[in-house]
Image (cartoon, rainbow, N blue to C red; front, top):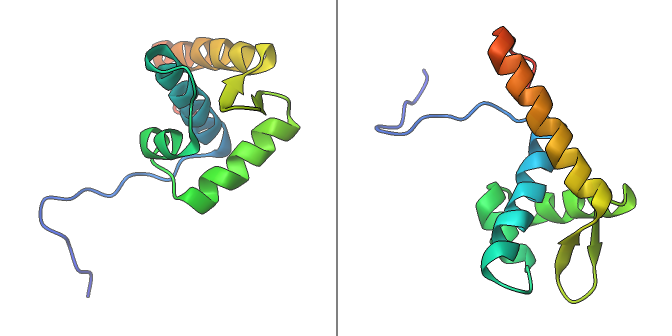
Length: 100
């Protein structure tokens, strides 16, 4: 028997690119309002558990999309990823494709 929770909807699982986009976009949004972006705010905005966020931040750091010094910052490579991802997402939406 399936137990349905009243008023709640289950979100589809996100693929890795979508999660990277969510994390990087969260960093950009936070950096517009404050000088030092902290993991807790990125966690909240990207809707990830702290353990998963830590894993993805480490992957993004290895891919040179972010750097951690006195907070979390995007590199040029991270900014380029956001720009390219938006282009691809816009294209797939216009074409009626469901890849991302």
